[in-house]
Structures are given as structure tokens and as C-alpha cells.
Image (cartoon, rainbow, N blue to C red; front, side):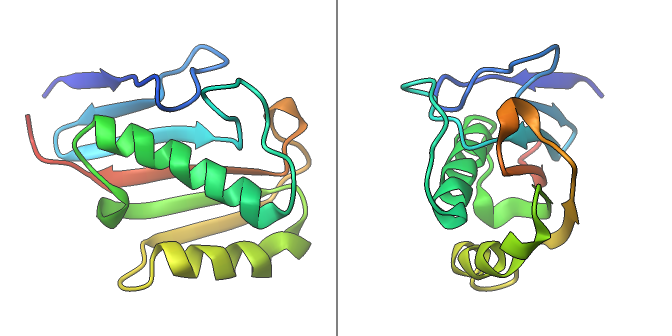
Length: 129
């Protein structure tokens, strides 16, 4: 099997030596996304729910580019600088995944790129090429 690099201008460009996502077989491995607006290049400020929404929009753009979508997410990894934000993020994600939500990991970390409060990465199913 070959691996395919996924790149879209609808999500922030990688800020390091990594790809936005890699497809291998029928699985997509999306890199972590932060609340960075791809159009302005600026971080989204405001409540954690607003930041989570931007992160999900970024992930959705990467998934869509690969022929997948939020409804194909198998596992979502959520990284929070403050676990006190967990309930608000959980409530927001309940609206994103109202039925049959993906498996999820949520952890508190000491820091994230660009000083953001939240980052998410995903593993999703895609149609084989």
C-alpha cells in the first residue's frame, strides 16, 4: 500500500515538518489542528468553544480534501492546556457528533504550539483510492 499526503489551503498550513494528513489504505491520520484561521493566519480568540469550533472546521477541511468527513472519524484526540475546559469542549463536541460519536482521548498538556489552549487530531475512514 502507498501513502498519500493530504494538503488543502482550507486548513492552516503545517508549521513544522509534517503533513496535514496521511492516507494509508482506507485510513486517514490527520495531524493536530489548532484554532488558527487559514485565511487570516491568526489565532482565534475567545471562549474555548469558539476555539474548538475553529479546530473542528480545520479538521473538517482536511477530512473533506481526503474524501472523508466528520461522520467518518473513528478516533478524536483532544489536547487541553487546562482540563477545567473539558466540560465545555465535551458539550460542544456532543453537538458535532450527536450520534455514534468517535472514540476519544482527552488529556491535559503543559503547552501547545503557538501558546493555544486546544489542539485536536483525528483518525478517520476514507474510501480506498
